[in-house]
Image (cartoon, rainbow, N blue to C red; front, side, top):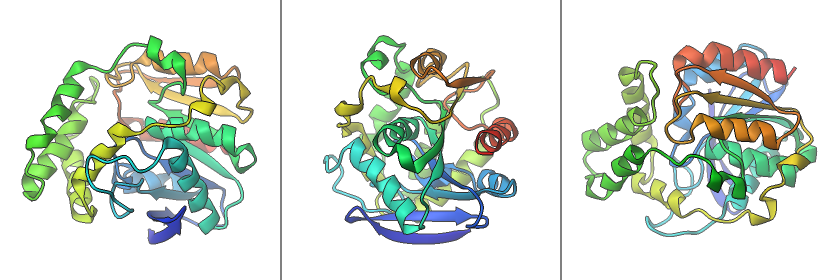
Length: 279
């Protein structure tokens, strides 16, 4: 693993890479309020061992990337897509295979529309349609919203309390597959150790922009793979079906019992699918 803090799009973006830079590049884009830590190192290594050069990175307001005052809005989702392109430029990568989780999948959709010449393929995990159609789909489980509503009372300077909160958030997102408590606490500890300012993550709740790309998914011309769990409480399975319909040539892979997560039981299938689409 190789860490670099890059000056990208007038901000600092922290990246980590795995594998041989001469191999086909895969850029992993995580979801809202989630640092690069939640792309497990073992998952990244597994993908790299299949002959891919893997990059994961911290969005703004997460990890070691640029953070802003909590409760402020300083960038749009289009800026976040441009951050991804800046990462590719810094690594001298002309074209890439995108794998986006949740919000990362929506950023991937913008990338495929905004920079089609830079994107080879698009894999969307637990994501949704970027556009007005999303408003017609089943909403997020209220228990997730209730959990994060308590964040204002978290003592972020108390390391154990912060780690409990970070790990517990993933429990609210799980499906019927066993909640991987040990793994979640391990990743939460790593994020708590790396992060400049944990409360900045909630600035993602204020994210706006990208309206010029609404309802244009039929214009995406690159190969698209959609991976969605049947028990996703954040973006229910219907969101994956809607994505498949919105992108005519997209292929849907269903993960039975999986929630809004990249469960370790699914790693083998996800890695195999990403390798196949990027071959």
